[in-house]
Length: 402
Image (cartoon, rainbow, N blue to C red; front, side, top):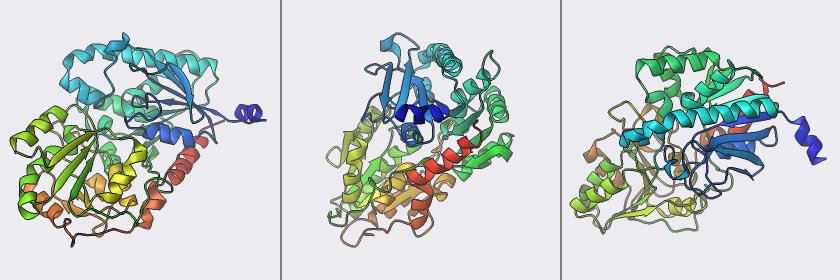
């Protein structure tokens, strides 16, 4: 019976660069979170890059995963610990990995399209996965319609004219395009892409069973929480710069930093120069299952997003939704993407990169007179809970299928 049901489901091929290397991997897992929720509608097959310590093939949560090798195993460092764009900027030699990365994914995808009778493709990121999906339609074999989803970095960065031309071509070739925020829809329009086939469809957060409030857990008066990759667009250096003023206003404050990335060493050095070693705690990566406890106990969650010099910025900032789901007060940079998530009463907004304003806002949320728990806005549940998100994506994909 199960085999019969599987045979009846269309086969969906998911192309991604960021994907969990194993169960419990701290790397961002939103592509898998969506994929596993689409299993009831499709036979989901994922093609993503291999990494040291990962299997080349396995099934997780009903999702069939194929990881392609694009270099000797020890050199497969293009994707993880910061993302492709960040890794290329920090280590120019990794440009030599790009041709192998692209060709290996293209070959693996083409082989599966033609041997597994793939019906649909979901390409996460316009560049490179959307580009590869568009190229597949020009190669001999099956011509499969695809949906391209942009998560931010691919759209806001890579601003050279040839890249803009490629993005427009990907959009023109796609059967449908999704972006995760209204600000990104406007960016598509700015670069001259066809927005007629584009819709705003964010990724999700498990607001039903994981990121939920627990008012039985006492909330700290002193703990400031940051969760995210340690990369420049997260703005963490401004939060560390704000700590001396926060400590002047609230002497018992402590900052807990959860995450990993290429900026960690520089940020630790910054904290030491400011004599904050005992007030700023770098705890590294934390499994998703352990994050709710941190959100439930913190006095305030801070997301000090900024725009990088090359135009990179946060696509949406789902960590803010995770915090809100646990009723943790949120202080966040006033950016278009975040305005897509919160209204004035649901978060405290500060000007990006303004250290003095950031310190004052955070200090106002500390102490026994801090904000206390903030009820989860119903619009967050309707828009960001994974069940709702997966249903919307299933409808978009099914409309293109056989």
